[in-house]
Image (cartoon, rainbow, N blue to C red; front, side):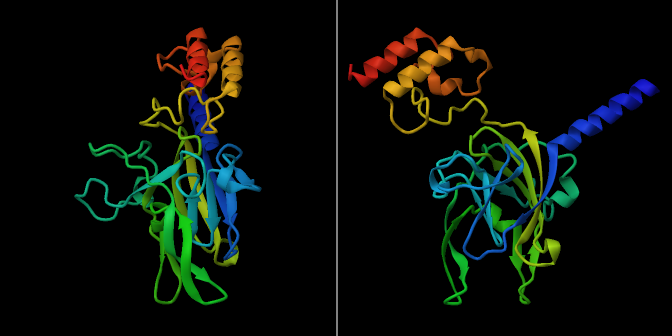
Length: 260
């Protein structure tokens, strides 16, 4: 009996460590608040368009992922509001506990990247202007005729900037602390990634700067001299894509740089 109780307690602790409740102070109509799944906190980012230090960004109702026009990351999001299409609304209210994998109804997972939308309110002109955000996460809530935001509670998953980590995501309150723009979110990390074997980047471009040069050769040498078996980034060092990083990849990199 005692053994079973300890096991149950341990499971509960591990589960709690994977789930987070956070309120984002995104009350500004012009500034974004950046959030990292790595640190589970708001982060200060000087140049978000070129930074991988953030995963989500918030401005009032609007939410960005580090993808597409928002940043250099391999993030994105999906929304599933209908489930298997044979029932009504598909929400986290009914499915948070049991749904722990990205829905795939046979056609693969279509991660949506950030793009331009025309519903950002300008306080100066009192008109709606262009802005960049994620189309999937845009459906997390809607304003009624009294300008009150109503959360949809739709099933959503977010992909982190690294393109590998998947997060179960629920934005459920817009009025935390008593005022609009204070967005309460609930999320759980550790969700299986159906695209885990995909290489997000160019093989050989070890620092992911879009250029293969001598810096990448040096990085590959250092990678081989370390212990690459424990790295999640092996695909960037595996120039010839044979799932092994060795001197053959260095020779290939040098040949590419020299134009051979």
